[in-house]
Length: 169
Picture (tube, rainbow, N blue to C red):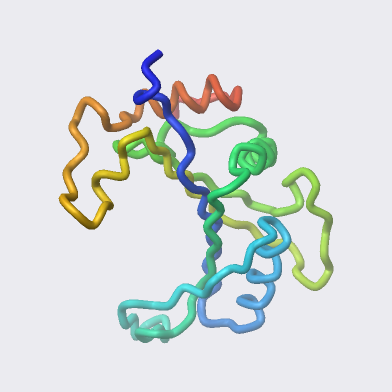
């Protein structure tokens, strides 16, 4: 196989929406720190939603981006959902995301009474060698259509690499 066509994981993003409750925010930050061993950041609202009491700049969630040791972490996260993922979870760019209803399902994570039982979202970004040209500072270029990762290629990558069953729903 061509080395430039090899698909890799660029990053894993673990995300939790908390609303405007500060106690839930603290629990979410503690949970993400436990799962990833990295420091999470707060996400802030960009729009005003008067019916929900949300205004711009108000912390409404937290996230952490993992760029190293992603394969082992992703294997554990897939185990927490039974090594199954719906085909609808993949986008046209080859990226995918899925939700974990309870963090207790993740292997190696123990129950913490301070956190309680909450879930999280996992977003996986895939890339190939050469994708840097779209982000470089000098002479950025678009990635040619033949080099982009399609939905079908991403599905095959997940099936072969992680032995995950992709359900047709």
